[in-house]
Structures are given as structure tokens and as C-alpha cells.
Image (cartoon, rainbow, N blue to C red; front, side):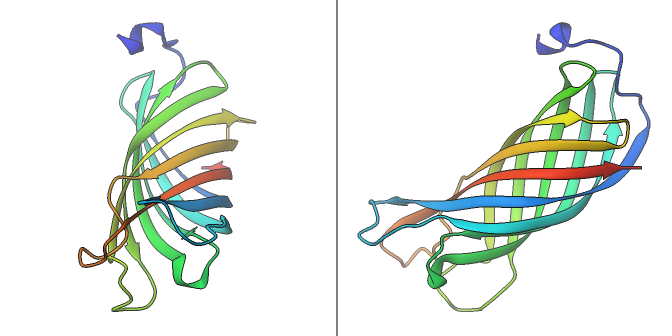
Length: 168
């Protein structure tokens, strides 16, 4: 099992809280391929989280964050309130690997052909700078199309996120 390769000194079975913020580089994957210029969107994300130690090697970290995603085209600019639920595994004293599901709720415009909910998978790595400060990088891929079912093509969010955080 993965846990047998992970050092057992790190996560306590305690609870920490924190904030994180950073930059997104997002775009959309279309099926069939887009017939228009599909430029990525740079945006911001900010949120807060809880981190609950399940053992010395594993933690559960649900979050609540705002994230600007989608494409650069005005019709594809999507902003979400998201809830990533990440399981973190301690690889070493400084590095943690995490993955889990995420749900997002669209926060702008109604009846625009975009679904109000988005479902994604998240994977990433965290690097501890100190006991309270960290850097992380994540990749998110949409499981479902962001477009309503009556639209003849699919579009799935893809997102690379670089963040900085503080745990207390």
C-alpha cells in the first residue's frame, strides 16, 4: 500500500485551519474541438480550509474557495465558489501529495447556457516552507461538461493553480 512508503512522523491527529490564495491558468477542453480561438484565462483564487489529521501520514482537507476559471473569451469566463475535498499523504517532512473530488457553484449570470454546478477532480503537491507557511501546485480537470445538455458540444474546465498558504 501507498501508506507503507510514507514516513510516519508528520500529521498529528489534530486539526489545523488556514487560508490560501494564488493564481489560476485555466482553459477549456472542447469535444468536438473548438472552431474558434480558445485562449487560456489567468485568474485568481482565494479560500480557506480545515486540515484534519487522520493518522501520522494522512489528513483530510476540505476547502471553500473562490476561483476564476474558464477561457479568455467573455462567454467562457466562469467564476465559481468551490469545495475541494482533498486527502493529503505525507511523502516527507516538507512534501505532501493530495487528491480528491471538487464541486463548484457558478457565481454569475443565469440562463447563459452554462450549468450552475461543475464537478472536477483535483491533484496536487504541497511544499512546507515553515510549520505555518506553504506553497502548492494543483491540477484540476472537469468530469462533466459546463454547458447545458441542449448545447451540441461539450466543454470541460482544466486548471493549473499555484498557491501560497498559511496554517494556524
